[in-house]
Length: 262
Picture 1 (cartoon, one colour):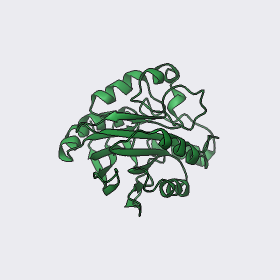
Picture 2 (cartoon, rainbow, N blue to C red):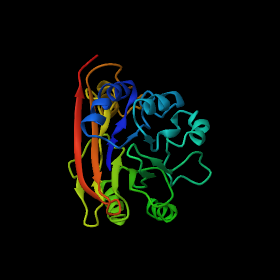
Picture 3 (cartoon, rainbow, N blue to C red):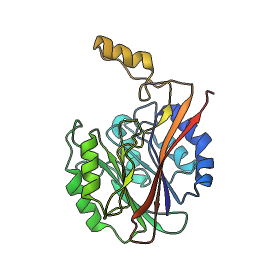
């Protein structure tokens, strides 16, 4: 099983990057299943149903998310009817939508995708460790299980990966928009990367117009974050390969692709 995971898609530039680069990536790496975090795909905050369907039509199989998924209020309506779009599973039970699912890969095998959110430096949330235990107890037998852990603290991400080592194929961190260089396969066979990075405008501060972000730090005055409308883009991703031995990983590779200005 060859699984491609794209880092957080940010705004129109991120979507342009996916449209331009994903087809070649799917062919080059002979991808069986493609996942992307899309919580920032709509103008940098949230996700609309129209954009979600466009991204799925581009060749992505599942879209994960995080704490920004609710910024577009229509998510409250479309998440329950679009199981290919996940919100963190450890939101309270009343939250609409799905936190995990089982999907058919292009090679005919089943893949489970689990979306969890961290608690360190984040909004209060149910325990992701206990949440993972509960989900794994319900999972049917699948060829691979991938966890998107949307969290701020590297320590929390590393701890969850080790907690789940040997029980899932991969734990991939999202949220910080900066790809880390700590990819590894843990002792029990679980692939781990603290953060997969961002798919969006490279001439930015983690996806935001630089002048806006700098002014906020210099003055301390809140300002609306805006995504650059044009300019060069970066696609950050990770490739995970797993074998037939219970879905454990045997390879993990970071990927960076760049796209010039429009």
